[in-house]
Length: 232
Image 1 (cartoon, one colour):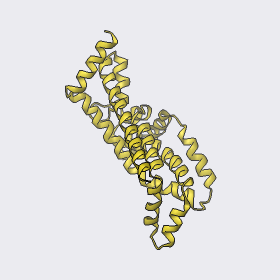
Image 2: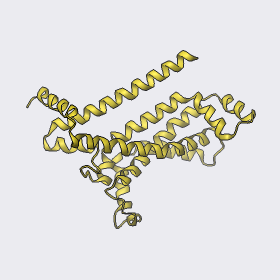
Image 3: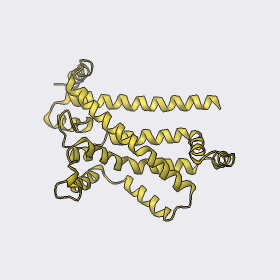
Image 4: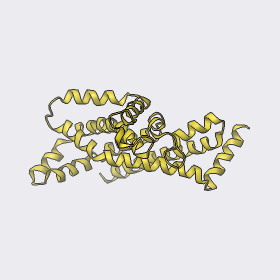
């Protein structure tokens, strides 16, 4: 079967409403969106504190964050597997091979990315926005919201980068999720499985979903940045 025929089959799968394929897409998006949603506020608070407050051991925290960004996802999955297995310290939680374990793994992967990029955004921000809002009587959350609005585009880029990283990672999801159909099988693990079986049509179809996602997110941030520039 040539590439053209396989691609045609992939497109047919996408538009035929194949329940298996769209079930995999649903698992992938739900897990990654929950992970980003859970980690977003802690990442904002940590990155803001590192940029604006004199935090003890700041250099160590930043060095650790930068180091964790380069850790392969399969290593994160291995460590999490050892923690969540029956013999591990968290074995009583019975989270291994569940979506909760996948969410936890994606939180660990996305957190250092968010902190690093958001810290850079806060460091490069105009401190007068924070100082003015705070001295005019705004509460700390209100002043922080004002500052975040000023740097909304770098913050949005950080979120998109982290989301792109976790929705495409395969190592951690495979190890702690177990690649169970309709439960923990997401887009990257399904692509790896189907490719190993020689069933390329579904793999290409799922790859098209990821490409469409990447295009959509990049168009969105470019459009938002363009509109913001026109209003200034």
